[in-house]
Image 1 (cartoon, rainbow, N blue to C red):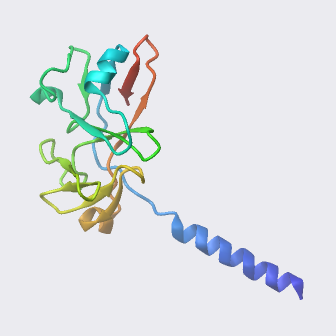
Image 2 (image 1 turned 30 degrees about the horizontal axis):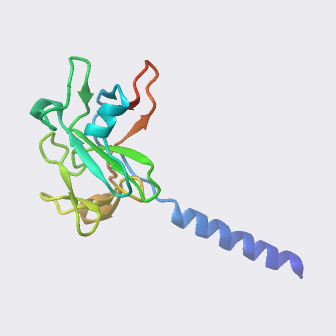
Amino acid sequence: MKRPVFQLLAVAVSALLTASCAHYENRIPPSVVRLPFNTVGDWNTYGISGAYSHANFIKEERVPANYPYTTISKTGFGGILLVTDMHGDYHAYDLACPVEMKRNVRVSIDPEQFIARCEVCGSTYDVFDNLGVPLTGPARDYGYRLARYNVGPGLNGEYMLVYH
């Protein structure tokens, strides 16, 4: 009698785990990303701190205007969106909307809802708490998440580095 209950429980847990594991496709072309913050001062000036803060970096458009870009600085396909989650952990995404797949069609932060939104296709993404997962729009329908990049201490003496 105990065995069928155990088997039913195992099937239920398996179904729950399978249903909660969504597959998301990364459609943004592979791109070089290297955005160094060489000192604590650079990070304090151009980086982010505190929960739910964000900054955009687009080398080709000199955003931010006074960031010290060099020839080896690379900001991905459409630019970099650097954010902190509610715990103060850093995350980086490509600004290009994965539905539109154009360098100049970028997501922007909705400061009232704390989500990223593409004004062209209308898709929204959870960049602060759920790693760029699509919430609404065609991106959710097709399973297109924002491309993610790494953030951490630099290996060559940089204070912090966004890289891919």
